[in-house]
Image (cartoon, rainbow, N blue to C red; front, top):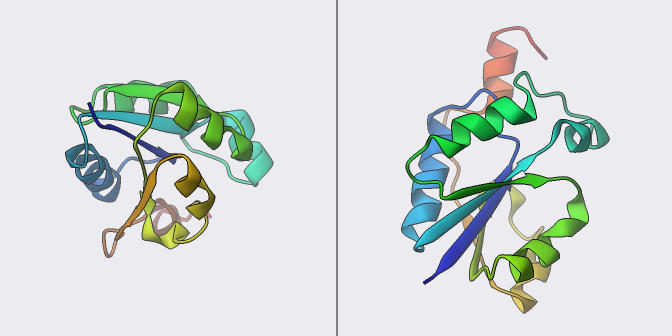
Length: 129
């Protein structure tokens, strides 16, 4: 079984998020999603509109997602790759190169973002930023 993992905040879930999850899931047999906790978002200087528990609940309902785990800090990725027997780490290409250190533990793939949509754009359009 090929295991895939990705991470994100997944706030204000939109087509780009679902498209990323679908493409990540298609690269393996099992998709684990690490979701930034509210506490970790605060450390990153981000504020999600939707709580961690609600974002986790929504992601668990998506057919492409097999497991959802909390992302609590920047440094947990190596441990997660080992703990969950991950074969492939997937992120959007806006993070290209930032997770290459994981190549010692698993394959790393950066997928193109969906044009024209992002949580930042939605928040800007709604006057939330």
